[in-house]
Amino acid sequence: MTIRLVVADDHPLVLNGVENLLRLEEDFQLLARCKDGLEVLPAVRLQRPDIVILDIRMPGKDGLTIAREILAEKLPTRVVLFTAELDEDQLLEAIRAGVRGIVMKEMEPQLLVQCIRKVHAGGQWLERRTTSLSLEKLMRREAGTREISALLTPRETGMVRMVAQGLRNKEIADQLFISEGTVKTHLHNIYEKLRVESRLALMRYAQEKGLV
Image (cartoon, rainbow, N blue to C red; front, side, top):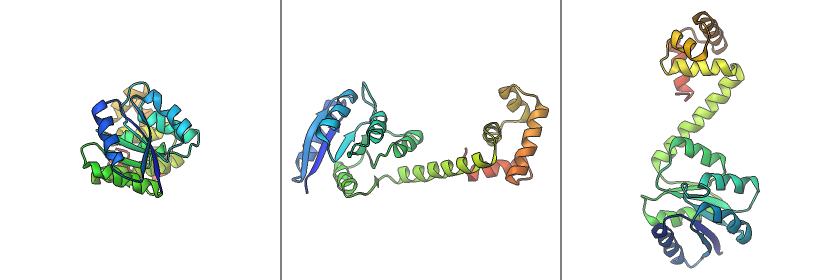
């Protein structure tokens, strides 16, 4: 079965390298190559590839924005990110945007080929151990945030984060423009809702839920 592809990168050497790599695979068909982010979505709409390979940082429109637009338009194309760097926030955003594969440019080129095949088969590819660990941490943080949001008000949740960061009552009061007495009242309510008995226990709770 032929795997139909579009590739986008604003660095000519990378773009040429990826194109040459893909052309070595007999079942890969390169439909279009894009040199900036603005060219990608029109190409995907026109060509309807199985997979689009995107750099995150591109002029005009970045890879995550393109991934979100592909998801929003319900296009049949699956997204693979081929990038030099990826922080935890970008990783979480990529998963939310429906990205199915992430390959770092520092890795062996053949891993990109393996990623394409796995994603085309319906799988997900996160080949870096650090990426997998970061993903676990981020998913834990999201689950923890949902759990706390169900129990606390947004202001109380913000206070939990501040306490977890080591801020004292006066510092919290200064940041929120409230009195220390109001902070103490909020913290008392938070302790009761979360069933913790001390500031230290609250800090541990926040750490367990991935909020820091």
